[in-house]
Image 1: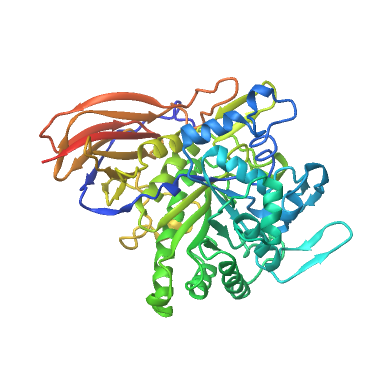
Image 2: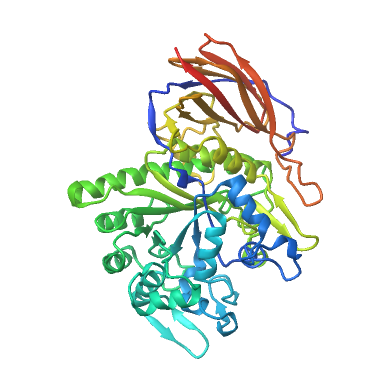
Amino acid sequence: MNADTAQRAASIDAAIHIDPRRQVGQVDNRVFSSFIEHLGKCIYGGVLPYKDDGTELINESGFRRDVLDLVRNDMKLSVVRWPGGNFVSSYRWKDGIGPMELRPRRPELAWGSEESNQFGTDEFIRWSRDANVEPYICLNSPSDEWIESDHYAVGTGTLEDALDWVEYCNGTGNTYWANKRRENSGADAPYNVKYWGLGNEMYGPWTINNLTADEYTRKAQQWAHALKLVDPSITLISSGQNGYNLWDATLLQGLAKFVDLHSIHNFSGFGERDRSDGKDYERRVFGTEAAEKGIQITRSLIDLARIENGPEKTKAIKISFDEWGPWDETKGTPANGLEQHYDLTDCLAMASWFNVFIRNADIIAMANNAQLVNAIAPVRILTAPNQLLKQTTFYPYYLFSNHMRGAQDSPSFSLNVHVDSPSYAGETLPTWIGGLRDAHIQSPSCKWIDSSAVFIPSSECARIVVSVVNRHPTSGANVDIKFMGYTGDGMYKTYSIYHPSVDAANTFESPNVVTVSEAQDTWNTGDDKIRVVVKEHSFAMFVIPVKHI
């Protein structure tokens, strides 16, 4: 669809009701996290430089300086997951330590390439320190088999490999792998890697040595017990599916006593359909409804597992949504390293993804956008000349991370907003979103106006930040934002993203086709609402200083 040529419909009317006392939970800054995988040019050519990159782009550790600056200063990431992803299912971490010239080059089985092992554990930790992020290591999937052939390993990792990896990173004693880390890093201090994933997508036939839910659960129990003996302080993350699957139910029943977080994955815009029938815009922007339903179901599965296992014997498990984002598998393919060129439609989906996480702040502990650079990523790099491109999907990430994150002295609290808005009644992806539409209060609603809000108290200036995505392709929206118990305190800021065409995209030649516009307006003291106009197919964020009435 091209909205600059489509006939514009009459504006829709909507209202967003906000009561700062109705708090869902504190927004965890780990929601603003990411993921890097040995896939395409994510690591080699994204995190690490291309062969012909100029020295001015490379920092003293050998990493791309511009990517690090973006991570630290713009995106302000909290946690980064590595090394996979599907890649990890055949990864041998010991290949990636020690002198570079001695590291073996291996066939890479997940994506059909080759792995040079020039970026391994020590490099990931060094990059994490440079990026000011917490490292999250996903272990080679739980298995009892590791069969050597003449050319490469067939199968997946062993418990011994996993125990050695945790010892290498976190060991403090006079033991073999702790000493090997000291030898390779030149420092005595452990890496103190906190987050460890128990494999990746082990339900999928695309992984090596995939398992049934019962098989995975039993092995994950054994692994969790043993890994905690090496380091009791680590946070273990089970390998869930999408939240609305019996795989998740089985895992949570069996692992409620063993893990700290449960991961789920989902991508909007992914799946077979007729992309030429004129309905793809709506399928893509409403795909996040499936992710929110998965979160709601997982919340209940966690409660059920704790009830049946005994709340006193189980952990207060939360969700690590550690792979998510817009992804059209016909655009970002293994053949092109998953380098998808994102447009405004994807930008709106990205904003709705963050709305989902903010609305469910009580149960979402971490969210790792897949991925950081080049591979289905908000950032792309060009080889020559050396450039960094901020894709359309970068800007919602930037706005949410900079305006909805809390600080130690001023935490961010998600608010239980109520939205009055007309709804979309057409086809969805997946189709069951539409099939469940409006069956009950927690069913997918597919409202044209999608919103989230946070309250950030402060002794200097309390503020409410409201995100509004108008998903209607042709109609602008008159939106009343109504507040209970609070009124305006002067000027408020508006950050908006809009282009007449939903197909608009940034390119290296024209990098600012889709970007953020800033404006200011006044909310008169004593008023209990502000009226804003949100253009068709656009995203706006309002940063509003408030005071208690």
